[in-house]
Length: 607
Image (cartoon, rainbow, N blue to C red; front, top):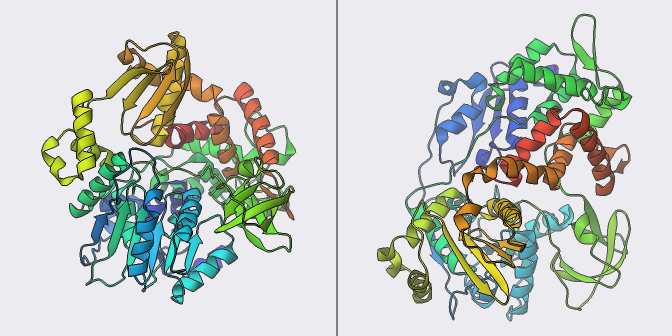
């Protein structure tokens, strides 16, 4: 009944459009808006954001049929500029670390002097750690809470209710509260660790003080001296009105496959009409008829290598040429599995009485045994038992560790990386930095060299029987992980006996048993040709990317009526199909989609 239900639709409002327009959620939304535009041709689209660097790119994304002139740009009046400071420790800015945990006493002092404070952390694990650190130094027993995406809905609602009623003085949170939270009593925001981007910092600052005529107050707590430079760069960028650029790319084919199946679930369709509709969405405006036929073929029967199996025969062609769903069970299957967010498989954390606290990843749960302890939801918990769907716990006072999550890491934005490089190359501006940060840069300049923009500094040195190579490339953790894999493979080929590597957002360090005499040979540009392809195909990266696109594309279902598959079951199914396709149909649509994901997201090849 969608055509009947939506024919009178007047307006779609897309809030916080910057948060997803450039990713797969944005692809799916633009396809859905294209469909709604066909059902209600007079439809009006509106998108809102406070942090868009290139408004024209978003106008094009929002425009029906790519008609950018149909989208008017409306700029709201700017509010009072924010008051952002960098919190400096009572001692010295640490050499290392990335969390700002050393500043717990200063942070609790800020919470004491403000009405309500949100303390933002970049990861869920760090949120649990910071909450414990603050609780230990909370001598005034101020009411504090913790909020992140892995806590149960009930636990999050309880905390949100306490904040709305003014019953909390401080809330430790992750990006689960970045967007759309408007609590009028919040008068201070604290960012633990580096902000990673000026736009993200601005979004978080915006949670403080919702009055246009008064400045929002925010404090950044850098984890180490590099993070001090990054925090300084973010503040300068905000002052200059410089936001982080968003990179738009071609729409993902696994998302398109899911959308084609959704359209078939609604009613039979004709190929030419659906292709025309799909092309009216910007991410798919350059889609060729051949590629669309390939997508349709995949949705129809799984493609050449899988067409012998009835479980993949989802579409049938009628004599008049239109396509329809082969069997009602495929509609039920689609409804249960539609969506773009493919989370790692989670197990619920619950007490013996059935009360659920939230969820941890299956991989972390696999490291636990009965009597092990871990911090979660602000509590120290002891494991009683682990079954296929839950970790059953009881509260304890024993010391505990923090759950780790494999969620996407926030990369250092290109904009901030360039500003940090600029700081290193301009000693005349160092007078603005604290004494210990300035001394650190001066020592580096004296002992080694400070790279200028466009230069890559590589240092090599022996220590405790090993030989180290450190490259300061400032390209973010994700890109450095990929580079580390490639460099150590090259070291192996050259007989340098590499042992391993470590990386952060600023640098990459590889270590081995032989000294590196010619670093330039390791970093030549052709590393991204054959070696990159070999590495990705031999590593689990492509399999991991394939698992995700297979779920989104509808090849493997996570949910079956009345039950959810475990992560092991989904992995087993997708790994089996992956091996078949690699062998018999290497050009398969989902392998193409997995490669695109591996290049763009998992390995950050562009950087």
